[in-house]
Amino acid sequence: MKLTICELSYLSELISSCVNTITCLALFKNQVQDQELKNILNEQFPIHVEDYNLKVEFVKDIDTASRKIKCT
Image 1 (tube, rainbow, N blue to C red):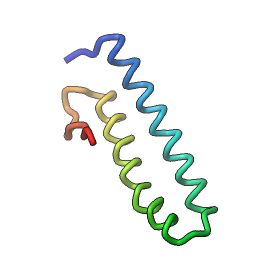
Image 2: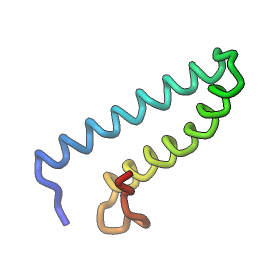
Image 3: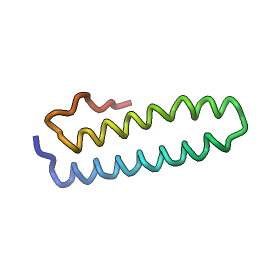
Image 4: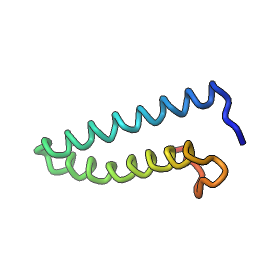
């Protein structure tokens, strides 16, 4: 299956957004002092990394991507 230019552009923006979110979470979780907030950030971090990895896998080879992108 080939992606259209528009779809590829959207996916590129989603991947950039993932990188931005991962970077911000990494910075914030090391600086936050409130333990409850720190727990939330530590819980969310691996979810965003997994989402990024899934999108990159999808771009590398759309036909052999092992999982479906979750819509949550």
